[in-house]
Length: 514
Image 1: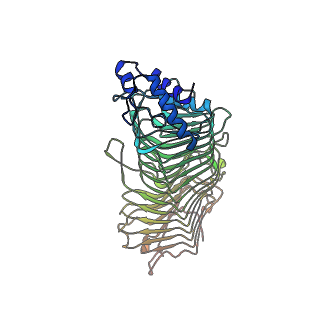
Image 2 (image 1 turned 90 degrees about the vertical axis):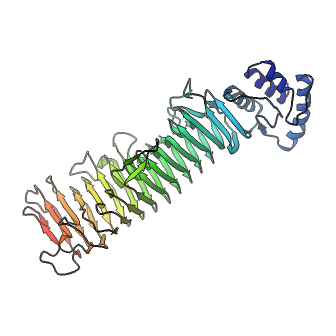
Image 3 (image 1 turned 45 degrees about the vertical axis):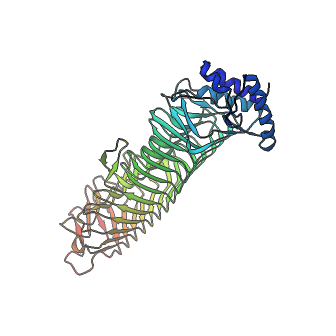
């Protein structure tokens, strides 16, 4: 049986075989009417023979076979396109073209290896008729149109996915290698637009997620135990989470635009040798660039994770998926709940950050902190613009061994906030600049060095400059210092003019080494 015969018969067998569809099947795209289906098949075969000489490996679900079947809205295309995928695999063809049109699905599509599937951009629309995570091959498929499971060499491009508020994202990549998802649109999904995850011992590798638009979805893209993933030029808006990974290696987030996330923007949860650079991230509730968790006893170890040269806009509110607004919290650059001994080389460097309302530039809250481990966290050479009366440069808590050096904090409004270093033993804050362009209000201090537990190692605050805070530049409060020198404060320029205390306030129990 010829290829055209197989395709036409599969399409007809997958459809409701009523007289109207049979009549329509006898008319081709040129409006030529045939007296029998066999006559049409013979004519199509002649056309296919001519086309196949030019495009040997290309199949179009409709155009290549020259079919014209009248399909009403809501017709389930799942068996039709799945049949085309299966036929291609058996015949060794490698490119499936999905022409202009709207296609409805009740179930996911399973892709073979060595295939490219492409549409016509926004004119090729896939719509879900219900939740797609039914009888999936893997638990990784939470409801995506395409399931790329334990295969290799797959390309999916230029398709508009409308989940219609079902469990219906774009693509699930499960234990597969050499997969690209590009120039697609994923809207209105209760699950992730793209999921990349291991299947047992099969690790997804060499995955490219390029120039996609993801909006009103659970997460833009989620990677779990993946390796060598490139996320380039994607846009995520109104999602719970933007782009994130856990226990993964060599993940690169480059030149993405992310906004209005109910949780985080770009998030690294452990992993090794990962980079986020040249991204624009704004309006994310729990932090625009974040690191969450780390565990020395699992793959969630964090090592060599870098956020560099990003633009971050930390707004006071964000827009939720339902269109309402909600307040943001935490910091623009946030480190939360890590184990010091499970993190090494976590660096935020050369980022440009704008902070609004009551938000904070740098935020850490290491809930499992001790006074002996090292958190491995560094904030280096970032430039932070603070746009509100209550914005803070940083709120750094329980980060033993933290390095906060060579940053510039520019307060553009009259400011009354206090930027904190709390229980940051063994750490340093050096060569930072705090510039209050319009001065300060109230009697709060610009920078606070604070402890509420005792430790054997001090925090060093050196070579910093505070401009236009005068006598309210620095407060040192080493509570329960047990007679130890908990702070080394030296070579700082804290006052623009002579003031009685030199810009420093010290408690009676300060534990200070000058």
